[in-house]
Amino acid sequence: MLSIGKLSAATGVKVPTIRYYEEVGLLPEAERSAGNQRLYRAEHQERLAFIRHSRELGFPLDDIRELLSLSDRLEISCAAADVIANRQLSAVKDRIARLQALQQELERMLTQCAKGTISDCKVIEVLGNHENCLHDHHREGCHLGYPAHDS
Amino acid sequence: MLSIGKLSAATGVKVPTIRYYEEVGLLPEAERSAGNQRLYRAEHQERLAFIRHSRELGFPLDDIRELLSLSDRLEISCAAADVIANRQLSAVKDRIARLQALQQELERMLTQCAKGTISDCKVIEVLGNHENCLHDHHREGCHLGYPAHDS
DNA sequence: GATAGGATCTCCAGCCACTAGAGGTTCAAG
DNA sequence: CTTGAACCTCTAGTGGCTGGAGATCCTATC
Ligand SMILES: [Zn+2]
Ligand SMILES: [Zn+2]
Ligand SMILES: [Zn+2]
Ligand SMILES: [Zn+2]
Image (cartoon, rainbow over all chains, first blue to last red; front, side, top):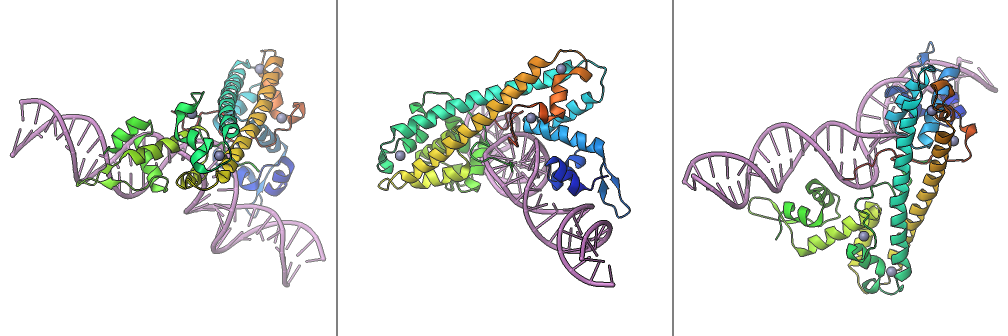
C-alpha cells in the first residue's frame, strides 16, 4: 500500500496530477486510511504507468480512457486499440508536416534578414505580409512557442 | 471605416478573437460609432494581419506583443526581433524532434501488432510498459491528438 | 415610419491537462 | 509529545481562444 507521495515518486506523475486523474475518472478511487489519506496498490500503479506512458506518446485523456477500458478485456479484438493508435499517428505526422513548413518559413526570414534596422528587417516584413511566404500554413495551431505543461 | 464583421471577413480572424486581442492589449481600442459599435481603419487591419500571420507561424501572444512594439520603431536595430524569431525557430525544431520520436514509437507498435486479441496487442503492451520503447520521450507535452483551436 | 432580421454589444462559462496556492488535518521520526 | 513533512479539499489560473445568453443597434424593405 502506497501513499500518494510514494506512488508519485514511483511513477513520476505529480501528486496533484494523480488526484486530477482520479477526479476525471481515469484512475479508480483509492482506498483511504483511517485519517482519510489515499492508499494505492500495485494495480493502481500499473494503471497510472499506462496513463503516463500514453500521455508521453501524446494521446489525449479521452483516448486513454478508452484504451484503458479496452486493456481490461483481454479476449476481444485489438482492432479498436489499433484504430486509436493509428489516429494518433496521423495526428503526429500531420503536426510534423505543419511544423516543418513553419521551420522553413522561419529559417527563410532569418537568413534573408540583413541585421540592420527594423525598417529593413525581413522578419518584421514577412510577419506583416503573408504574400512573401512560400507555404500556406493557415492556422497551424497554438502551443508552439512554449513547452506547455511539461516538466 | 470597417465594422468588426468586415474586418473579420477581410483578415480571416473571427469576431470574438478580434475582441479578445483588444482585451489583452494586442490591438488598440477601436473608435466607436454613435451606437457603441467598433470602427476600424487600415492601420488596425494591418496590425491584425501582422498578429494573425505571426500566430500562424506559431508565435505566442507575448512575443507578438513585443514584435509589434518593435515594428513601430523603424530606426532601431532589428536584433531583438531576430532573437525572438530564432527562439521560435528553436522551439519549432525541438518540437519536431520530439514528434518524430513519437512517430517512430507509434509506427513500431503498430507494425509489431499481430492484429489479434487485446492480450497479444503490441499497442496495449507498449503503452503499459515504457521498457519496450527505444526513445526517452519524457513528457512530450499536450495538444497532439486534437488540432486544438484550428479552424 | 414601422418592422424584420442580421450584426453587434457585454459578460460569463468552457475547452485541455494540468498547476499552484490557501488553509486545514494527519502521520512518522525523534 | 513535539515537530514538520506530507496529506486533505477547494478554488483559481494557465494559453488562446470559442460559444452562448440576452440586450442593443443598424440597415433594408414595405
Ligand atoms: Zn531582422
Ligand atoms: Zn505566411
Ligand atoms: Zn493491436
Ligand atoms: Zn516509451
